[in-house]
Image (tube, rainbow, N blue to C red; front, side, top):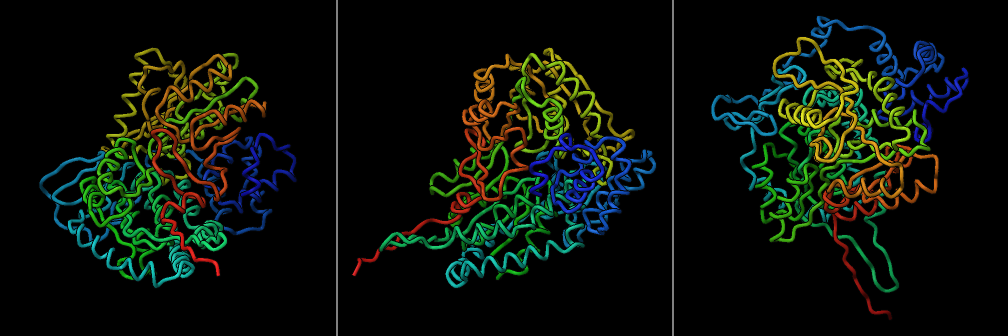
Length: 574
């Protein structure tokens, strides 16, 4: 992984030894975006990939994934074959969640709710996965969490709490369960299976993470004064649908390790993924320390407004975050809110254009563009704009095939719902009506089932302020290009002033001093210099949203400390 953190395939001198070294690192890596690196292989090296894997003399799961991906990319899947590859809706049906749901139908985030149930559907096929009852006993769950809090926080040492959490992750790490979880993520929200597998692997590989978490909970001595950490109480986590497994753990693990009890309400889009993660972890913990609540925003609102709840953590839109803050304000509840983004990427004329174009496409299209820190504004110096746009539209964007995420050759799955598809379509239509040009538009599956939500990979040029795709969070597979003068001042002004968000950003240039100055000037929590920050940042770093992209923050020692309060105990020196 450290090798991959510094490597871009275009830098490799493609001799046999270097190629085998790369493949060995790929086979051993757990990087979730491995398929993008494979896509960048030259054709002759791509064709030789099976032979290289055989030379590795490795039967690792990652090597098998490489071979599967190679096989899938090497054939043309017909519509009939694609239909046969789809899993039936009964694959993840849960008999406990099948009460009659006939009347009182309504929609939330494009997800139908009927008579007290979430109708959990596959966005690639429109098929019903399961019917999930909405939680009605919110007060009982909260009081059970409060009753469990005293023993968990005071009678169980931090090291013991962390050891229990490690045991829970081992259950999720089991190969059969990990595969089931990855497939469930793909079926519920459409993410390509290889990305879902990467999410699961990243979610459960936490050794260094736990060490930092353990250290953050230790007392600190200042002469005769000792600073200890004290748990808050009942913590509510409202998790998102775009990373439905990893985001639960990023928030629940530090909350639980700090001595809090936790209630997780997964997004109504991914209820079964949330159930599997929470129930697996809860099996190794004392009763009611970790609980599950299912439902829409009404259930979330009931949890947030409950007087017993001491902290609320949410990953979602800035609009929802503001509502949570308003509800939490009367009791001054602690909040950690990771909110929206409209991340800029600045490409100066001194940049490695091939690498920048590759990254612009890859990180605009990751998870079908449905990531808070997706690249959504690409500012390119006008002197290199045409050349850069050609690389994006002709060399890299066509590599991203749209289709059912269960089929390995597809790198862009469906959007999460037909509502989201309509939202993205409106952004593209508005942009073209106002002068933007479509440089590339991919195909989508022919004869897609009714209720599916595929949207073509689209490269737009001449995007400017006043277009919805420029001004608002799009959350779709759009590569949006805007030219600028190329000056340092204009780059910083565009990045900072043209959006209320400040989550991530990227700067591409070979001028290191320029990169450092611009990175320091951008108002964002993470800035990647010639890279995408999320893929390369160290586990010890906090994940922070500036401006309207966050309130509070998580991860790293600084983030972990938000889940407890410091208390100073002072003794008079003898």
